[in-house]
Each structure stands twice: as C-alpha cells, then as structure tokens.
Length: 292
Image (cartoon, rainbow, N blue to C red; front, side, top):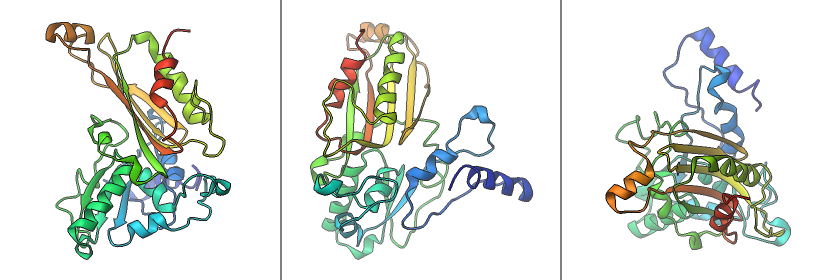
C-alpha cells in the first residue's frame, strides 16, 4: 500500500459518503503495521482530514507463545529473521507486538493464571510501552480510551510502563530506556541529529556496530525536559519521527529543583526494536549531546 491507495483512498471515501467519526482499519493476520503507520501519520501542514490514532494488536492467549517461538523464515520488509544464522529469530508476531500502542490479550479463559502471567511478561519484554488489556471472547468494558480515541501519536504518556519489561525473556525484540537529564535548550539540535543517525541510518553514534545483529528500531517515544521549562515530545515509527511541543512546565526546571532541593525533572527516551540489547544507547546519547 502506498499513499495514493492509502490516505487518498480513505479521504475520497469520506468526501463521497460524508464525515466519519472513526475509521477502524483491520489488516490481515500477516500484515506488518510498520509499513502502514507512516502513511496515516502525516504532518498537520499537509491539511489531511485524517490522523493515525493508534495501533491495536490482538493476541491469542492460548497460542501466542508458540507463535513467538516458531521459525519465522523471512518477515517481509525486514532482514531475514535468521540473520544468516546469527542472532535471535524474529517472527511476524514479534513485529506486530513491537509496533502496538495497545495489546488486547484475548481467549484468557483458555489458559490458567500462571500461563496468562507468562504471556503478559513475554509481551512486556518485547514492548514495554503498550497498554495491555486482558479479555474473554473479545469483550471489553468500553471502546473509548481502550481501543478507540487513543491519541497515541499526538501525545506521549509518562512512559512509566517502559520499566516493566524484562528483556531476558525474549532476546529478539527489546524495550530500551534512556534516562535523560534536563537539557539546555540549545541541545535540541544535537538530540535531533542523534535521532536521525539511529532511525535513518541505523547507526548508533560512538558505538561499534555489530555486523551480525544490525539494529532495527520499530518504535520510539520520548519526553525531553529542558532547563528553561520547555518540554519536547518525540514519536517515531521506523525511520519516521516527529518532535513536537509538550505542555510547558510552570517554571524553569532549575528553579523547580532549587525550590524543592532536588534534581531538575528528568526526561526519558524509549526504544523498541531488534539488536538493541548489546548496544550502550544511554552512553551514546549522553556523549552525543555534549558540545563538540
């Protein structure tokens, strides 16, 4: 699917049939959401009448662990899951879970409590950002705020859930967290440069690359705090990312720290992807934002 058959087709439908409150796009079971998301996540300046609200992945509680462990062959749009015999295997299930903003674990009645906890832990090891809902026969208490009206791409939560994952449970896809101190305002250009290197070029500055397991970023979210009180939010899917303004702090970060006798509020960068576990992302980021 390209932009002509994606965004334009839906906008044409809206013009012919009238306004829609919501459009739910259901892909096939083998679809890679990372190929679709950038088509609908468009810049406001383009004047599009639609926007990407979020990605929801439905997981079968009974079969998901088997799906994650199945030999994947070649996952379309990615390098061979075997990496020519090197590195962990990546299945289509890994890709779909890694891109999700919300994960619905269905058929919970078919597994016992212990197995359900294993499923949840494995999912959180892959994607520490997604909100998880457990359902029986796909029954949820409400649509709004659970699978609709997510606003996953025009805001960034506190990123607290990023601490929940245990990467040793699944070495294929990992969630990596970088703690970022309050930054001088002029450092934003260096942050942008670091993001372009990692997302566009697949290179981590000041780190030796591992030719056997190249990095592949599926999702990125960040909340950056600045000493002048500014807050910047970052959203990224594959190589597409956007930096936008968050709600400004009521006073400068340095003044908040002085008044409370504490450190200035810190930010966080969260990466989800493949080949991340052996890379020192935090050291790379902190080195990159130092003045040349």
